[in-house]
Length: 126
Picture 1: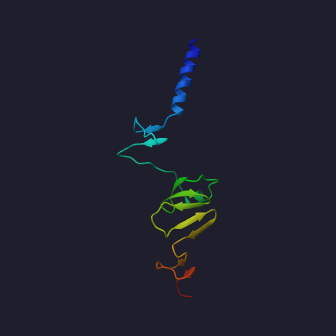
Picture 2: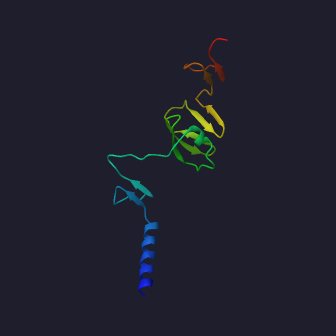
Picture 3: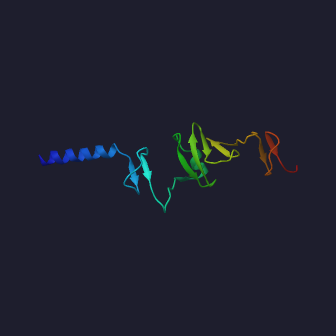
């Protein structure tokens, strides 16, 4: 009888943990969050990957967030592309083995920091 009561209470405790959200640093996690991390002195450290590790990751989930240590930027995965978390429209994008620039003009420049005038504008002397 004691074993049955113990098992019953453990089962109830596990079910109540599964049904609730989790708080770290708070006893009252926000109802809309599955995980609520609260701190006034520490931050959240995302997984850190090199560029190669990022683009070769097998089957990343949409919305996956990582910190790219080669680019010193946060990236998230959407459909088939890694997108930088950035406020700038002039950023490099990564998709499988491709790296490309997607600015407003869709032009790419090599060898200069001025706006390229053509789809592929190579600056420099020949």
